Image (cartoon, rainbow, N blue to C red; front, top):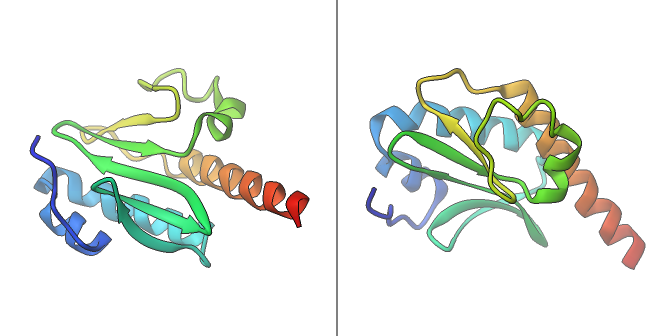
Amino acid sequence: MPRIKAATVSEYIAAAPPEARKHLRALRAILEKVAPKATEAIKWGVPVFEEQRILFAFAAYKTHLNFMPTPSAMKPFKKELAGYRTGKGSIQLPYDQALPGALIRRIAAQRARELRDHDAKWM
């Protein structure tokens, strides 16, 4: 799939393939609730949520959405992720399957906790 050129997350979603938009909007809503103080940005051509540092990123592909919360945030959910294709720090979420909202919420919350705990130790 050609890289989506967008300046904002809303533009990214609007430019994504039609089959991706529903998943992208749902994922964005989940991440906004988990990290309400985070800001959205486009980095390396994909949407990210940041709180001084990147919390998580996501990207649309031809047949799936990649959610990228980092390897450490995924580790506690290894058994629950067994049914998904995963990379070192990413999860493929096929468009032809329902978005696992509760699982994404827990993984995103884990990542947000990790970042906040890490920052608290440095202050």
